[in-house]
Image 1 (cartoon, rainbow, N blue to C red):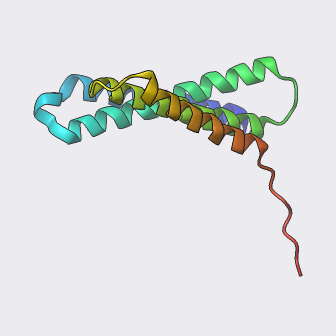
Image 2: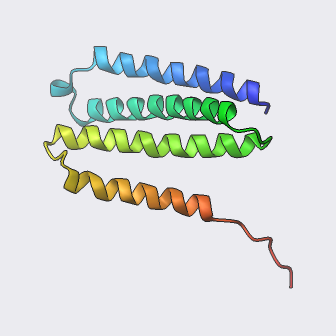
Length: 130
């Protein structure tokens, strides 16, 4: 898949997720819909944010770096988009249950930072045939 087709596909998928988020926002009442409405809200918001953050991160990487490893840029921007979206959705949920305090948010930020550091430093070794 070329970079152009990946970007077009990501824009279309993000727009579809954004439309799904708007549909959930306007057609479901969270007080009546119960857990299903909340799940659909958070899932559609998460997917919308992943697509948005991944696209913004990829465009920033393409503009700021000069190497030709496009696959690596796509992978890193998508992974970091997942982390940022997870942080945003968990923060929103913690705010909903009145627990959005730095004592609860700091361990999540540290865990995501350590996870990202692991992925940055991890290098696969070639398999050794015996």
